[in-house]
Length: 185
Ligand SMILES: Cc1cc2nc3c(=O)[nH]c(=O)nc-3n(C[C@H](O)[C@H](O)[C@H](O)COP(=O)(O)O)c2cc1C
Image (cartoon, rainbow, N blue to C red; front, side):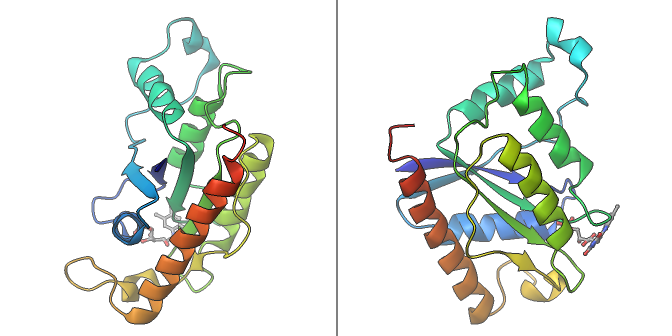
C-alpha cells in the first residue's frame, strides 16, 4: 500500500477541485491510500522565518515526508499555478537540500471552468516539479475543462465518461508510483 498526499490548489469551500480530489480518493485502487493535506494555513514563504519556522511549516514538512507520492489537483489562476499551491511547494522545498518533494512520484490534474482545462497551470507546475526532482506522470495528461458540468448536486461525478477517465487516471498513477518507488525510495 502506497501513501499518497493529495494537494488541492483551491481554498474555496465548494471547489470543483476538492470534489475531484474526493472522487479520486473514492475511485483509487486498493494499492493506494490517498489523504488530503491542507495548505491554506501556511504563512507565505519568507526565508527570514527559517531561524524559527512557523509550526504549520514544520507540521506540513513532517507530514509530507510520510508519504510515498503526491497528487496535485488544481485550478488555473490567470493561466498559471494558484499562489496558495506555489507557496506550499516553496515551503516544502526548503531549507535548501532538505526538500520534502525530492524523489516522490507525482501527478497533476488540472480542472477549470474554461475549455482548456488549466493547461497553463498544469505545465507551470510541471516546470517546478522538474527542478524539485518529482518524477511526474506523463500520460494520461489531465486537463479537465467545463468543470461545472461534471458533478451532480451531491458533488459526485455526474457521468460514466468522466468516471471512467478518472478511474483510468488513478490506476495509471498507481502503476507510476510502483515503478518510481521500486528502488526502495
Ligand atoms: C483569480 C482567478 C483566476 C482565474 N484564472 C483562470 C484561468 O486562467 N483559466 C481558467 O480556466 N479559469 C480561471 N479561473 C476560473 C476558475 O477556473 C474557476 O474559478 C474554478 O471554479 C476554480 O476552481 P475551484 O472550483 O476548484 O475553486 C480563475 C479564477 C480566479 C478566482
